[in-house]
Image (cartoon, rainbow, N blue to C red; front, side, top):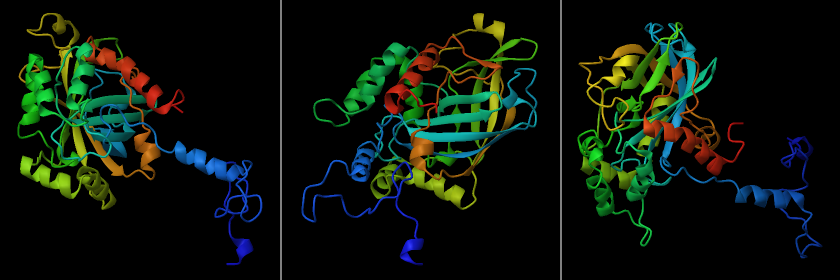
Length: 353
């Protein structure tokens, strides 16, 4: 190929530049001139190349796929995404909660399970975890909880005493701590863990009837977890173990899937049920509200630009579609504000574009 046939390097505006190896100077050995726009542009872009990490859920990755409805639940909701036979494109992001962006995937920590459904009625987001409960039920305690799981202000080290101080002074956290410290505390990988809405939502059908609902995404690969020794060895050998596992599985055509099942509570029963059904630290007994099959989620495409498609992805509990609404869950109602505000702080006011 001749030199004049090669495509030139350009500025962000598409304008060819004389060189991407030599700055514009006053003479061969003179000072750099400020009107070397290409140099200034490159330095300015580099200074802004990385964005702040998420406050919780900083370490994670994701993939794209589809959700297909396999069972008829139209008697409970008019949401187009849950109508029989409907297929919807989906973005999924998995994460740890307390760890920073460079922390090991295999630390003992809950896992985030966030989904964005690209429905014909707009984007519907479900921001869940791999456990059906959470540590606190009141959002006023959430900030203190997250701080207790992160690094100390004085020595910048994580402190198990600080974590346990919060849990023991917050007895409502016992249910989630049991999950975290039990056999399911460290998933072998994201493909072998369940996902839960944890929160209760409201479904509305075409006749205007209302129901309370909880989502359960059951892994079709089966539950599989790491022992503490395995997790510690992997943390040192491959801190990106879960990220790598998901990417390689999809790249090799081994597409992971989850079967969505829901629990449905008649609207009026919430007032008389034996405990508060909107308490995020509690589960609904399956004997009272059995699981109802809905459909299947399959992830079949890796991102082509992880920073743009995954790191800049913004999931919001307030992204609801017709047929889906909120519940009186205090934590859920607080997240409606806090997630959008976090995106504005991390990504800027135009984060939805």
